[in-house]
Length: 157
View 1 (tube, rainbow, N blue to C red):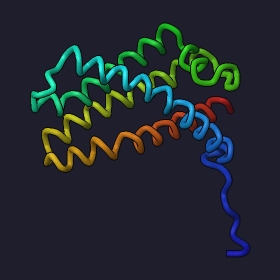
View 2 (view 1 turned 90 degrees about the horizontal axis):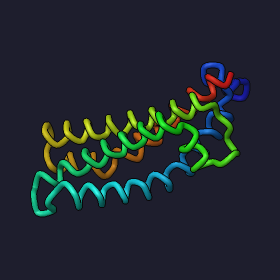
View 3 (view 1 turned 135 degrees about the horizontal axis):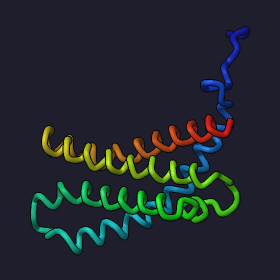
């Protein structure tokens, strides 16, 4: 073990750089998206569903995630730097195409979460669906941010 060299690169990208960007993306995006998520969930609940309907409980996460995906996609297309400047200001300087890619990647994540919700609802037990619903989104979100971090560092050179 003493002579073993520990790799500090991932596919030619310094791990320190990737981890720093991942941490920056994670702790800054989570609060902003939490506020947005609360507003979307409340709106979807109020406008589209009846709270006493059993199917509402299963559909609400999917509908909310898809509304979030649509909103992020529109923001990424219309004003790609808005998302970044909202979270980072001038600290992280990315090109508009890179900000657009971040927004679209997050939108895709929410589409996938909505689809997974439907799959777990239709194909598994209610307990399995609840476990997915409560425990899967955060690790999937963190993994998606890690992939975005790697992609941004790879594009950065």
